[in-house]
Image 1 (cartoon, helix red, strand yellow):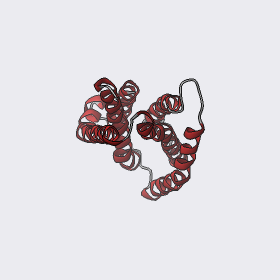
Image 2 (cartoon, helix red, strand yellow; image 1 turned 120 degrees about the vertical axis):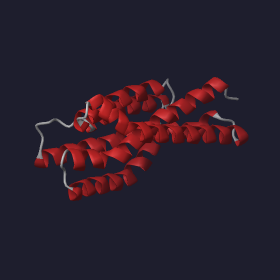
Image 3 (cartoon, one colour; image 1 turned 30 degrees about the vertical axis):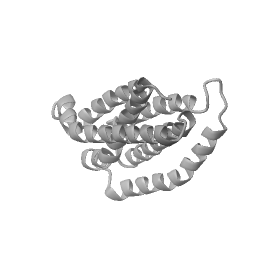
Length: 194
């Protein structure tokens, strides 16, 4: 039986995980199109390519996690590595070098967004796969799943409400700078949630 502390810790991970996910999902187009000037066609192609890649990446990651055998277990190494790498890539995704433009900026957006998806999958697949591994089934599994989904919803809602206020605050009116600083702060909070 899981303790209340273990359940709360698992829920806290869902808050951080979904804050990062919602930040990326909601603001990546705005950042690259409206702030940096990447064309909608280029961004549409990047996002489509990433989704097609995910169709293969997610099942492969599931197999990798299932076959992982370490002294730390099968989930913990991927949670640690995936979370650390995802936090770094999240920051890089919203910190495009000012010297980039045109094709260089499109390439930067494509590489960082696809890497973000890969590193998010490295952490997300083992996160949700842990539930059956450390619950005894039935009611306990349902309770933990419900708690985690509720906490994930809180994380999504929280980042949706505060992002633009934080971007303006940290950027002093400069959205490009504000996104960079907010992405860094969110990345650090994400690391601490795990």
